Length: 421
Image 1 (cartoon, one colour):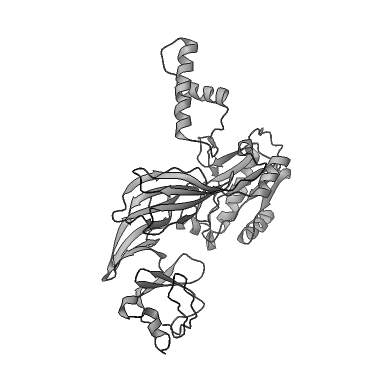
Image 2 (image 1 turned 90 degrees about the horizontal axis):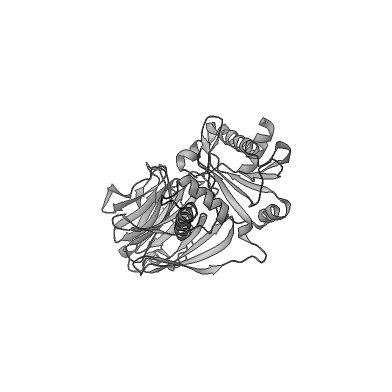
């Protein structure tokens, strides 16, 4: 399959190749993973690939054996159809674990023995609701997996062999940008950002009974005070929540105790307060931002999640300039991230910044992507227009103060919406 190459056998592999039995255009990538070289062959922008492998132990010098020979590297075809995406997570000899969307639009973890290539076993089944974004094998037989749950990241520690859940890692509402760690490492580094967090690298110690998360590095922007802002997510009809990065279970526990004591002392009635009464105390005495979650209904009834970033003291009277951003294509998920220019707009000009997680993206898996692709592209435009209408009806802005933005595929979105409204 390959008749010209340059393979330095190191962690970084550079490759020059001419594949005479693969029809181009194709994207080729090599991965060196314990004893094996994996060849990924991708086509177009869809999340699918073929997967071939070569066992380095078959030759004493590995790929160096082929350097001065005019012969083919004997790759073995494990997956030879573009019917799913396969990404290697770990292997123990011939036993491989892959992250795949084959028959699982929200992805799952599977295992196969190269000696029995037709017998695939689910290790972590596809979630009914959340998208399995990544998995990394660390600390021997542990996995750090990240899920995208309603456009927010969730981190878990699972068992590599069984897939069973061991721990939920505490992270704020935002985006996990990277998980760095090797199979032999007991410490893992996790990159994190959010609308109100420029960037944090967490150090996670897996040697303790309960994994310990602490800040290893943090980006600090002089003059930026995250307490001046709140972030709303429009997600679920009927539930209103507003959140900040500072939320913790301990603060909720302290507040609950305070509410009960205040209720008993002031009213002199030994009856615990109702939930509604607790909420009143919460707002009056703590002034802590509350979460705000509803769906923005699209034209066909689909519920579109949105993030809304604004100053904490905003009044919903329709007087604010508003910037609505969207993309809706190529399976790209728009998750929380820090943007200094938009923060400046919100802080100094009172701008409300919004992201609409419209169909065509990957926020809810491949089905969500396909619902905004090809013949379904109109759904993207309807979703974006509906998001704009929600911002007006909810009192954030008014039509003459609403600006829409998008780049590349998002530029197509903006152009179509301008002409359809």
